[in-house]
Length: 134
Image 1: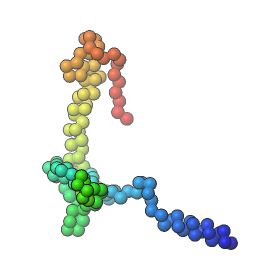
Image 2: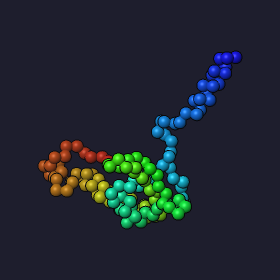
Image 3: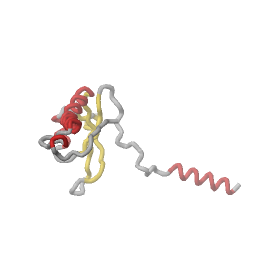
Image 4: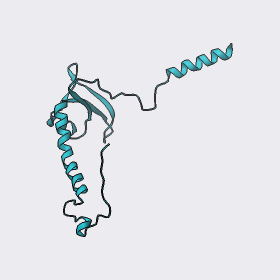
C-alpha cells in the first residue's frame, strides 16, 4: 500500500514539471486565413525592413503583439514582434527571391556559370550536374 502511494506521488510530481525539451511552441501564432504570420526580432533595421516590405504588426489590444525572446548585444531584453502579410504578397516575394537561384541552377544544368567555360569548352566542370528540388 505504501509503495502504491509513493508511486502515485511521483507521478503527480512528474506531471507538474515544466517541459524543457524546447518543443513547446511558445512562438506559435494563430493562423489567419489569407495571411502569413512571422515573428521578427527587434534588431537594427529588421522590423523597419519588414514594414517596408508590406508586413504589418499584429495588434494585441492597443499595442503591437511582442514577446521577449532573449537579450541583445548590450544585455537588454530583446523583443520579437508578431507581423503578418497577405499570402499573395508573400508568394510574390518568395518567387522574386527564387529568380536568381533558378537562373543559377539553369546555368549549372547548361554547364556554364557566369564566365566560366563548360568542360566541353575546356573549362573546369568534370561531371554532369543534376539538380532536383524535393
